[in-house]
Amino acid sequence: MNAALEKPWWIDGRSGASETYATLLAQIRTRAAAHRPCCQPASAREALIACATTIACDAEQTLFDADFNLGEIEALGFLPSDLQRTVTLSRDASISLESLKEKAAGGSRARLGLFTSGSTGLPRRVWQPAANLARAVKVSPRHAEAVWALAYNPTHVAGLQVCLQALANGCTLVDVRDLERAAVFAAIERHGVSHLSATPSFYRLLLPADCALAGVRSVTLGGESADAGLIEKLKALFPAARVHNVYASTEAGTLLTSDGDLFGIAPGLEGSVVVRGGTLHVHRNLLGEFDGGATGGEWYDTGDAVVVERAAPLRFRIVARERDWINVGGRKVNPHEVEAVLAAHPAVVQARVFGRKNSVLGQVLCAEVVARGAAPAEAALREFAEAQLQPFKVPRMIRFVDNIASTRTGKVARA
Image (cartoon, rainbow, N blue to C red):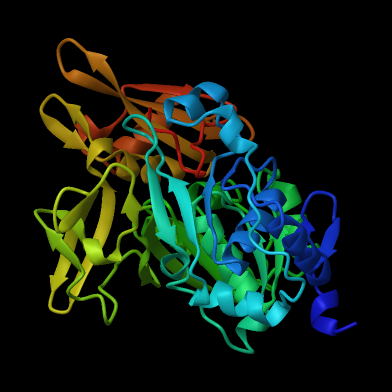
């Protein structure tokens, strides 16, 4: 058998179980004969096989998160029977590894229906052409040597982009989602992971680390604001890696990439991504197709607040989503800024800052903190924050918790 077909496409980071590219192609051929236009995969592996089938056959598929319950699915306008309906895409047994790689690199005419996070109401379906999702995919002999860790939800943009990057180069994916810190380190070492892409929340749970993972060559952050302090810590944990900061969304796919926390507009996108009124705007020519019609005009306001550091050439920092800001006595607080300060304390693993209604101030600032080992005294942690923040940015209430809730995309849950 061809060596490329014997190569694992998938490794379970928990058990070590694996499947080859030959097995993946067999799965695609089987599923093409009974394709589900609406699919709720039970696992990351199932999700990626469904995606690979859709891409290979130039088809359409709506992907529901595994934890969508029946009520949520019906509220979105779908019936349980929709998840069982199948259609025949192809009975052609000639789907090859080379054709799959070409399709994953942007050559597919497929469309995937993905759901926004729904943090301000019901999720909304966005139809993304495969070519949009593959916008940042790179193909070369060097990229073919990569071993990718999958830390993102595979039914969302970031997880699918990791999948397409791996499939386009015939690489191996190692599933490290939902693993404990020690198990993530073990999977990276055992399976020779060279490329890791995850949310800042995922990386913070790996810190502080008493080891260095020198085999990792590329570290990418996306999905949330990443502060300079976290990036510096990751450079110590992954000393041989180049660190990338990526801005992407369900609505537009990958748009911006940086080696730090400052972004610029990539060549070719200068007229399609702009900063207006303190937020990032994207031209509709880069967007997917929304259920229910247009996005409200020629330009789509992402709601991501931006601070311009330099006008020419344009360099800016994405500081928070507009809706995340907390109004404390008429003064706005960026929760990401406060979380970064709290997380810098040596005894803190992760923090979540949020507002609680108050009859006098409108909102008071609160924090949930996950400590490593014995929790520091609340007064000591507040004093640590006071040394670096204005008084109104220091949380009035700090509660120590075992874990912090995350969204379906792996971000800190704000609501």
